[in-house]
Length: 68
Image (cartoon, rainbow, N blue to C red; front, side):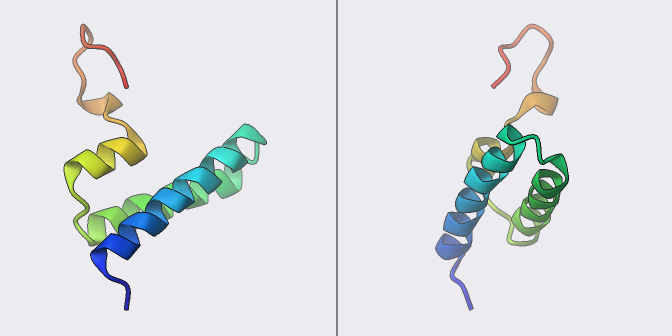
């Protein structure tokens, strides 16, 4: 079984794969990776700062705040 730190590392590796698929306009596989990463991060209760690094925090920003 993977430790929480190993799970975090794998999620960040998957983010790089997501970016490669997205840049290649392979949106289906990119969406699958995104959905899986969201599910796993919720299941293992990934800390909020790590979730922001992986997925951004766009939906939590006010209109006058800079988007990340």
